[in-house]
Length: 242
Image 1: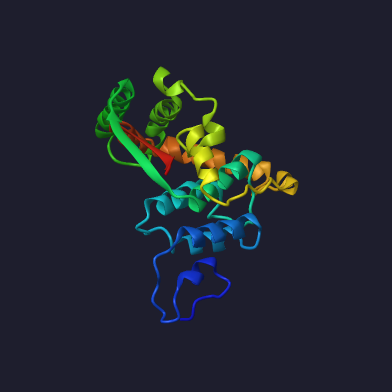
Image 2: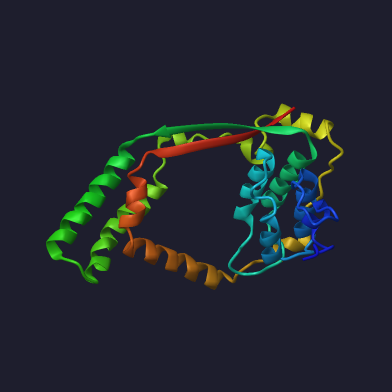
């Protein structure tokens, strides 16, 4: 199959048909095509597959980061807030400059895991007493409220927030952000005002889907409780400018 000449990722494929290692430049072109409404979310998601297994950790990080900013259930053109747009610009800056990723991962236990474990144990106890059946969906609902509450519970150490993170993330410091700009020819594109009026779904459909999610959460609460009983894994990825 011949590569699509309009696919930004296809420019990395040589004429022999062998797939070349995806580059930061080709990923940048693909993102810019999405930001310019040249391709839709479904096309964007499909073409990102070319980059997901890249040997470059920066490329993998950018692909993972942008996954949260488009919908893969409903096709749409770019729909971003100004804050999200500026974040995409910084990701493009990452791809345009010689940056590396610093990843720090740690595991932690807290009273949240104890509460989740006790709730899960209580559900199993009552389930064994009552027997298997559809009534277990009703039994799981009160434990679902516990699970939802645990998901919103933030310890004091987690509540601390750097007020400048929203304007420099994913860079570690202002100095790294400045160094990245100086080491590249990248120039930020201003937020298009017409994007403010765009939305992926109507407020009614957004609320309906949110309600549906919580309903499933309540009725299937043992599963999220099981994961909440495991130690929390905190991974922090920061971009360091060379």
